[in-house]
Image 1 (cartoon, one colour):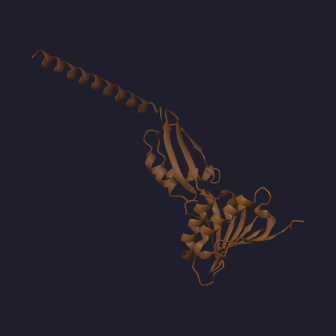
Image 2 (cartoon, one colour; image 1 turned 45 degrees about the vertical axis):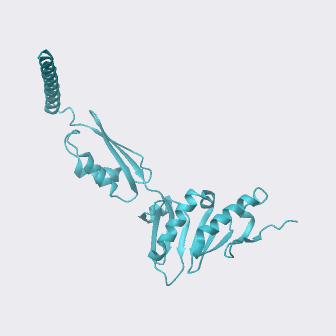
Image 3 (tube, one colour; image 1 turned 180 degrees about the vertical axis):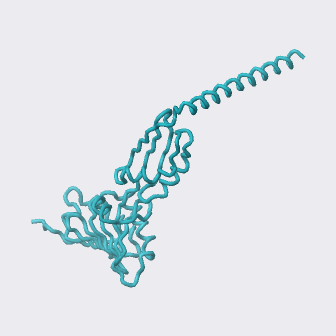
Length: 247
């Protein structure tokens, strides 16, 4: 019986404590709103290198309200993440006077050209619009589809696989790449040093792995830039023509 009374007292004590805390929070919140404590706040935007801050402010303006506490953070986040060149957004309140918005932008890694279609692609295979501003901002390799009978959709899977491979497994190849041309049966790569590399379309990744091993083998005596061309189209072979023949 005594133990039961003690339990009841503890429960009542906790209930009263929770009630008092709730009343205090409600009172502080009501008082803060009545004096306009959270009505004036600053918006701090970070992480955006390509997208103008003024553009972001204009996009979120309809979601703004008179109070920092009444802003719907999810609405702002969803709105911004629906925009081109934005991958993710973190929105948070820093009471009492700051709304913090951190932007993670998408970065193009290829400019794809197919006749009258020009579009960027990021590392995740997401397409991004290309215009004068973006083309001037992102100096990325140009990939041209020369096959007159092939649509862009036909090659998207191969292009995405190629991008994932060179970024994760062969980044030095991407860093020296200036142009890619795709024809029906083979791919042609141009390095920044005017070296041409030919690969068959049907087993592209396997050939690039062979090229990577070849590059390790000839280094430091030779680099890929020392060759006029490198032909990988003969199975498991590397055929080269040197720019500077050994004496």
